[in-house]
Length: 299
Image (cartoon, rainbow, N blue to C red; front, side, top):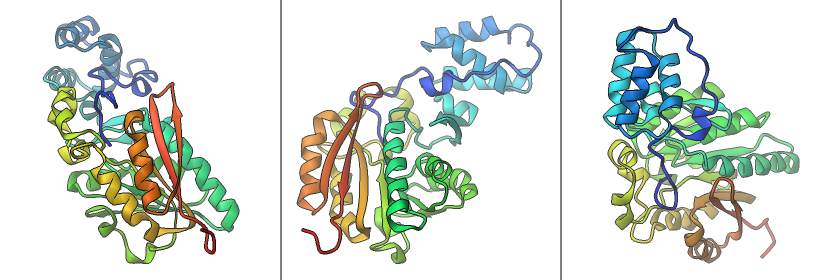
């Protein structure tokens, strides 16, 4: 779940958020809260896409005082998504509370892969797929999967209390359940051997590189969502070691990682009996490893 030189977290708004900026819904505000004044303040703070951010703040603020407060929070370094309270992800708005990991646009590639696998699972079994969003953060992945798949049995989990509260805002209306705890320890035991699609957006920034992250990430997102250990793969190894006990025969585990880590990640999948496949998107600079638990009776 982590940004890094491998997983950029721009100080400007994610393209998925800024691309859908709407015209202001309220009458133009007078100086010093005019559009030009907001742009000037954002530029001075180093916001690369100051014009886009200004439009979003102007359209979100209901009063001049609220606009001033939002601009102040943004120029002091709070992520834009935390300022406005949402992030655009896979074509929908996801609620994002302060202190919660902001979903990255590159993770849309992971979601697209999971959607396809969920549909295949439904066709294969003739029932709604059982889907788990592990290390769910805001619950963005689970919420989108619930939207994209006609029927779904959805569960999500995270170790961070703030993330769990936020995820419930996004996942519960979609019919899913959200649990708090450390990886599989959080899930109901009745899910063992039943999961068709397990999405684990684990942290994968090496510990020594966390300090290189943009201030927005390292100062406003939980460290547990960023730090993946010495080589960035500690949590991934834990997930692959336990996932086969929870996957249904033929079930899939999907994990996002970096291109340079893929070889070692594949080794962890193989070592734990999951048949790995690496897929990537050059446009989103995303690498996803898909591991399949063999069907019963197959080596």
